[in-house]
Image (cartoon, each protein chain N blue to C red):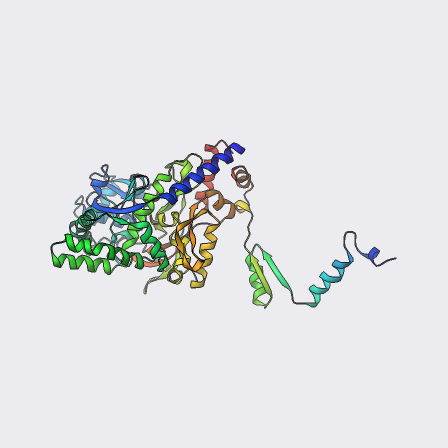
Length: 73
Length: 420
């Protein structure tokens, strides 16, 4: 059985080789989207983190979001 | 649906065009009754959306009582309050009469108002004269010192300013504000540069038209000692700029933001003069010695017309010193505040630029769709009044416009356009 065949369907050897290993061996580098508390907690521990401000459109109000979609350019 | 989007796009383009094309000029100071013919005895214009005596906050009630005594409609403050409670006075928003007023925003018949003419569209807007800091009527002050100062503004300063302005070609405000932005003003909580530039522009005309040297000295000293003197002029300018933007069918641009100490209200171009209100927020700020947040009144005043035209909190990057003064964080945060306001506006004003942002223009034309979509509420720089009548200013801070105003306005705009 080849090495490739041991991988979960859809994953390439390259991803197995690079991503998990680098995550474990290197320092984490994080992009946090949304609630800033997660980014602040990581930053307090010295982790490099970029905060991206984001919230659901119309504060999560589905009816308003639908209205917005009809009125948007 | 595409037709609706096209209507919105064209309407907002027109709204932005009118806002940026405005040519505001300070041309005169006259009695309010001459500027606003409807302003009769017992009629009091106030800041914010409509409100009854029963729902008015402490400083608004204090100012009403004080202005009633000032106008001679009551012998003392208690009598004035009793008359107000009995419905003897008619309360109307300044905004209904092309006027604006800071904090409590009292405008009555005999007070002098500054006249700003938008020479691109021919409309005029009005605002009373700034009284200075401390115990003043706009913060609810109403004792003898407050009323004496108002009488001096009415009898001496107002007529002298009017005479001086009429002897000149007026003062072109767009370029003056442009210079003020490069000198550290944002025109809401910092007006020291524009007040100085204004005094420089007015001094010769005042000197040539005011025959009494002692009076001239008093006038020049009063203006020179008040860093916020220009605020009321900037407000009248804001009203003169936004009034021609009212009632453009389909436009989602905000034409007024205002608060009466109880409610926050907005008006939107495509919705005419209808107010969309929500409970007003408490400012987050810094307090003068001896006062704290426990003394503070909720947010108040028509001065948010400043933010409506892209200045004040929207131009915080021009005035990093203000960020610390109003408790908005470190001066280095100022640029980020202006950047954030870009997310809810449709344009930059190419004539009002900020050096610290590589001369980007101030964020202009608040779009209610963007406010609702992003959840980013307009940032407002503000003074803070004591919650009890008669005390006056106790601090300065920042406050956010309540999102509920924008959400209810969006529903109304959708309905107006046949979209729900």
